[in-house]
Image (tube, rainbow, N blue to C red; front, side, top):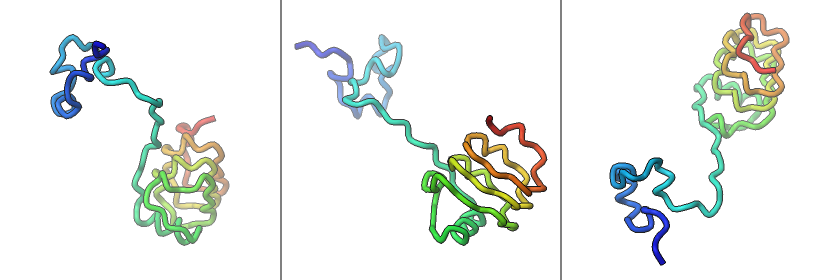
Amino acid sequence: PEPTNKAATHTPTAIHRYGAYLLFPECKAMSACLPPRATPAKSAPYVVLISKETLAIIERQTGQKYLTSADLPKRLDLSRCEDLVDVSALGQVEELNLSYCKRVVDVSALGTVRKLNLWGCTGVVDVSALGQ
């Protein structure tokens, strides 16, 4: 039988190295030149590196070592961490308790956190980037 797409007739290495659109100008989109997937692609969570200071605070509070934001637990209690400043990598946590973290100022990266406790965070003045 005839191949149904251009990728079936050419090596994947050539397509990867040069791009299917360059090899086959009749392909309007890259997906038209690639073989169909057996299963749909799962979206991978984005990964944010956590600062050394924040990692040390998280380890002190939880007793666990984490390397990236994708490794963090769904619930994270960092209450009363008066030395915590950078919370930019904590946006993937579902429930985050930052109560009485007085040096936290910028919470704009926490808009995707479902439950966020900022009680007593006197440094936070702008919460416009936070979700519902």
